[in-house]
Length: 381
Ligand code: FNR
Image (tube, rainbow, N blue to C red):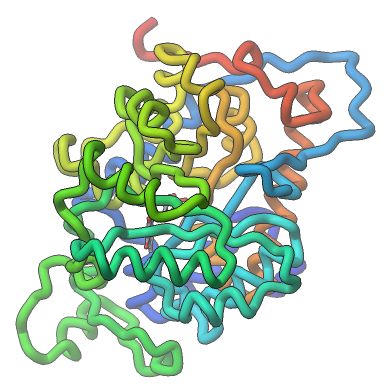
């Protein structure tokens, strides 16, 4: 399909599915167990409805914002997802360049498939900001070196992932053999059956690609030890990625600069929650807004999980989020069309966001307020 024919993020996903190796598709698309949290992340948007204002001049409409003080052309950034080169030979570089060309910010995964230096060098100018997603290594010294490295390379913020201390069971991913080199895509198996035949050794790695990646992570992170440790190491803004209601308050008290509501795209879970029973992210944001509106004035609140439409983004902004992260859609976009796919994804989102803002009688993201969105539970009626 020529890229000019692509209308929405779902279509980018379809193209990615048809051109990427089965393994890349399995890794990017899979989620915990029966993938309920992942699907509910997306379905949950259907519970929220708008109250538009009419007769407001909207010919001028500006969807730009700032994230931790850095300008962003739309209230969207790239959530760090591992191993972009599984989907395309240029991998993360596609995202860096696409983000640079469209003026959005990329959060680079600790498990990127290019070095953090290579990624920094792909920026279209020195002023293009990059954020860094940190999985804390269990050895403090190794973790400290990582922080020093990304500071030296000019990364502007640290998103410490706090919800993925152990891998969950992502079954599509586990069944497909691990193929990192993008050059191997031609040889990659196309069907799960082939995959089993080719993996040869007959053994199942119970955690798939995801499990292999996070085996060195710190399972003993804590409020008391980890946040003061990181705070003492760096002046960079610290955002906790993977937060839930009550914890948001603790994050503010611990001196964090922001929180990111996330259930890891329905993939892994906070250790205190039952496997695959994470609430949809947008529902968590809604509850935080109802129960702790004070949090939003203490720090910036971000969110990710299931955002696929401009209206999804607008709903989160109405509830008080500063910006929204997208994980899989950017992996699919670069898998489908490389750098141009990333540019296309941002253009689609921008068009959808501006259209929705205009239809709501809003011309600036700061005017997206809680009164404009309502939660409706049809079944309870
Ligand atoms: C992720 N995610 C993730 N998060 C993180 O903190 N570090 C990482 O390395 C990864 N890697 C990763 C790989 C893949 C293939 C996926 C799908 C996800 C989670 C990611 O940052 C984000 O929270 C979710 O992807 C958001 O949900 P959506 O937008 O994919 O629905």
